[in-house]
Length: 523
Image (cartoon, rainbow, N blue to C red; front, side):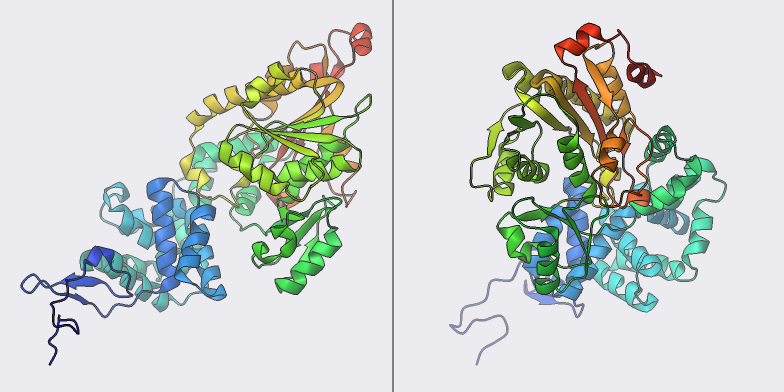
């Protein structure tokens, strides 16, 4: 007869280490016998995956879009549970500032003194109660179970108490409560869950592009909404109509074609990695605003016969692949430069469908490229590293991982890259300086500082060029000379683009020292 704790061979089983268990219940060890047993608490797989992802983001400063898919795959979540976990992770990250303020009202301890894992569970619970279609009792009970499973009975009691208080009122009540006594940008920061410096930066950028400061709440709200997945049909490889048909057939998703880029296909859902066109490199995931930046650069006027385009900061390769499709139809080659070995490999993978060697991938520092290859290119794209404030819909954790002090090093790098690009371009050629950030320090100020006192440069009207190629010619892109896209107005990431043309020697000889555009930029 076998006794508890023995194997079929009669040898005592080694007690399982609770920390290494992968079961659905929490393990406990009997201090007298040494045997491990399980509690009756059962893990909710989707919520547990969300908890793990949020902890990785908090502890390791990981990106949710990189860690979450692997956790979902390892947990073998079904499609519905995967969608639930995704919304729970991204929504909690977006609105954690709001939820921390609510926790602060309901806790008798400062939130900074609370265990970070406990705070994560509380944020998850509040998000389900106030933002998701989850019954209050289900949100409370599952979070209490998660706290017991991942933490202990003590924190579980606090989770139960705090979340039950949250269920007593609706979202409107809590927004009024956490903004009581606050006005202006401070109130917006608390209500929409942004660091205050980002709220001010977005306000200044709105006003600088001719929009009213009163539109700021709408922009903040748009940045808090999940972005649809957008695919880019790479020219010469597949059409947007063909790509949309494939997505509708194999992903069971609704689609619409882009309003700005004729290569864009917007999906209602589904995993684009399942599409053969994406697997083969005929198409790729790329925001419509990002596509427009590349297409506007390719459409800008240049002089002379074109032979070479350069993507100076090419990783991960989406814009490079789009440029390659456009360049091939003009018998032009593309050089893709990337400083990171890993990202250089991503560029090679993104452009693998162009088997005619039209794309050459180089690994090197973009700041050195101009000195090594002066006057090499007819068009140069500088998609500069930036704060990412324009892509908060897709990377909500970025708002909490960045600070205003980070901009000093970023803007110095951006200026160096732009100077290198201007050295790379031929007279008569064009440089496109782009960022996925509307922050004035990373956009207009970088351009104005770099072109100041340069009689050989002119800033072109990027919105005017864009209006010639966008699908919906009636779409309002705002005033020039810079192109600034907005999620609330354009449905894209907040991409910025400046087009800078190097004048030909003949133009330099006859041009005045300061053009009207130069004067306008400095004001």
